[in-house]
Image: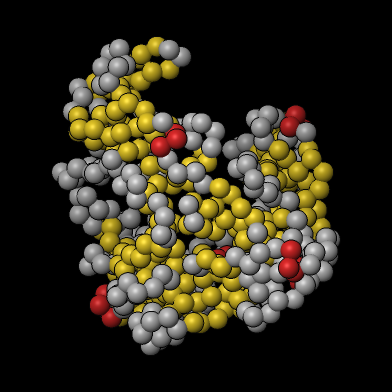
Length: 477
């Protein structure tokens, strides 16, 4: 199927002759006759952003279905807005998109259980003026509350059959003795690499930082056991009335079935919130059979709230040793200034799946694609923009940035040599220990207060011109 080069006629716009668009082949993706690759080019390094469905005039990304995959459009957001005073007609919010990208024109809704059914795609209707937007307050009343002027609201229209979109078949390709790839081969010849593949077990895999500190190719058909040491998680449930058989939990709306393994979150040390261990998954557990430990240590029935989203439960079986799975290496791809980092097999011989990381060889820093202060999209320094700039003095002449650590951690974090704030790049200097922290707004310098114990401070040098960073040029082929 990957070799087919057919000129397809879409349902809305006819695709022009196949030869009118060049064939793009890059690590991890290729375009087809209907799906055009939309990617950033950084001095020859190509980073996929989405596919552009030329028949439907919209961006799409591949989503796994029970029987394969389909390139589904970017979705609008359900964010609690309604078009009527009774809060019965839900409307969607259209998120802001970067220049050159297509705004969502549909609503994609996950199924209740992804193992049993596909998502639903609905067209969007007319715009709803901001002043006509309503939402439900915490007390259940429906009130008119016009959203921010930048927010666009639209009505929800009819369902679009899934056969209107480009479908793909997962194909396993052997690329090394230790790890293969899972490639989605689209009906129009496009392709994208989704996962690694374990040739011994046949399991789809991805690189995970294991409990022993190494990156390993672990299975992706999984559930989670959160234990008692991961804040914000539901804690451990058990499959029996004696609370002796722990379970793994997986939100059903985006599960990959069959579930074969369970990630266990294990409390870490003062500097690491948790580490991961991998277990074999056991039999499925009915929600009605779930139990949990009460405050007094007794084991009590704990079925989920009937109104809660569906979840899948499996018994958490035997611990699987970390070294039972191939190690993952980091492979740099690209011959120019900017390289893209991939996960590879143990010997680093081939790139398999993109890590989402870029590195600027000219400046010696990792970088991310963002809008620079000069208005151009560039590979700006750091793993992402920092949250804010503060000052170590009462006249706001000594700028600094903070990196946070867990309470009790005595190991200081290491910042990038250069960091970005609101599109502006700065050199990072020495560590600081300010008594007080100040901020600058509206031209005045104001006291914030004493430095929190969990923040580590670093001086910021002069702003670095935007032109020092490589441009990212968005292409659609």
